[in-house]
Image (cartoon, rainbow, N blue to C red; front, side, top):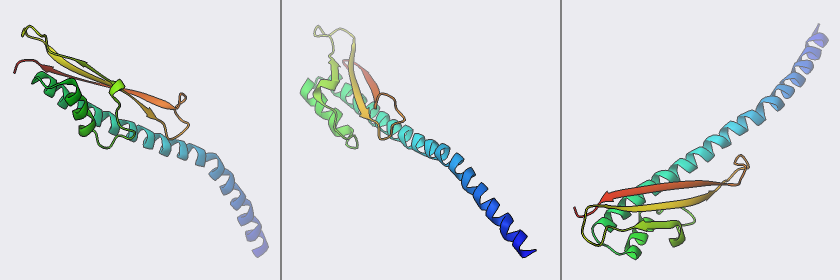
Length: 133
């Protein structure tokens, strides 16, 4: 009777290994997908806050260089940092009429996992502030 139990345990042990081999890739896919999504969301939130601050600076009459520095300073957790070429600034109308100051950042976030087919996520954030306030 003990040999029958040992034989049954060996058979079950093999079944557990097969089940583990089937389930493990799915679990890893889920975990790394959550990590990639969380990382992208974190960068998007930082970009959104930084363009809002920069749009405010532009609406108050600051220069483009100052606004670009505000974008970089307001998003310290983004690595590599936002470059000037990724920032588009639309200034207030020069004649003093009503308008909007707009700052747009397009950032390419390198993926950590091969789950993203292109290898990078393109994130865009846009901040708009009324001029003359």
